[in-house]
Length: 239
Ligand code: 5RP
Image 1: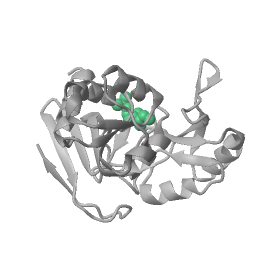
Image 2 (image 1 turned 135 degrees about the vertical axis):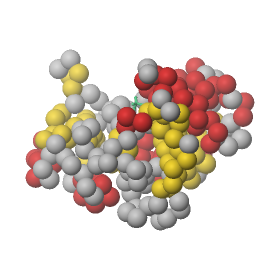
Image 3 (image 1 turned 135 degrees about the horizontal axis):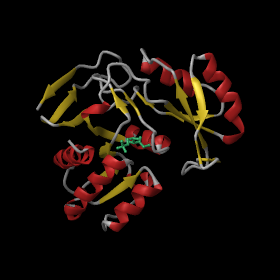
Image 4 (image 1 turned 30 degrees about the horizontal axis):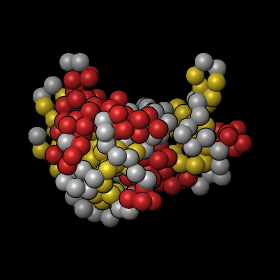
C-alpha cells in the first residue's frame, strides 16, 4: 500500500485526540503535514497551535490556524508528531527533518504526546535510523569525536555540499552504527557532551500514545501513566 495512504490514516486517527478549545503542539515531517491538513478541517475547534518548525508554521498559517509561541501558550494539552523509529515501549528516534530540539521542547511541555506513523517505523531496538544530534557549529568536530567514543559513526548532515542549518542556526550530526539497548541512558549521556544542543532520542519523554497505520488498520499503543524517564513503561495495544 502507498506509504502516503498509511500516513494519512495515522493523521486522521490523531484528530480524535485534539481537545476542543485548547492550544495544541504540532510537530514536523511528512506525516504531520497530513495531520495539519486534517486539522485545517476543524480549525474552528482549537484556539491555536505551537509549531516545532518554520515549515510546519507556514503550513499551519496557510490552513488559517493561529500559531502562537510556547511562552505565550503555557502547558499544552497534546502534542502530535511523527517519528523516524519507535519501540514497543514508545521510545523514539526523531529529527530526520532536523527539527528535534523544538520538538523535544514542545513534547516536554505537553500533557500528552501522540506519535503518528506508519507501522514500518516500529522497531525492537532503536539505531538503524542514524541518530540526529544538533550541535553548536564550533563544537561539531569535538562532539563527533565524543560520539565515536560511544561506538557511533557520526556524519555531518549536508545537502549539495552545504551544511544543513537548523531553525536554531545549528548543525546536525547523524550518528550511524548505534544499537541502542538503553535509550534513556544514552539520551542523557549524549546531552552531557559540551556543545550538544539536543539529541534525537525521545526516551525520557517518550510518546504516551502511538497510532501506527498498516494495511490492517491503525493500531493504538497506549502507555499507562508511569513517571516519565522510567524504563518499565507498560504499553497496551488496541486496534
Ligand atoms: C522531524 C521529525 C519527524 O517527525 C520524523 O523525521 C518523521 O518524519 P516523517 O513523518 O516524514 O517520516 O522528527 O524532525
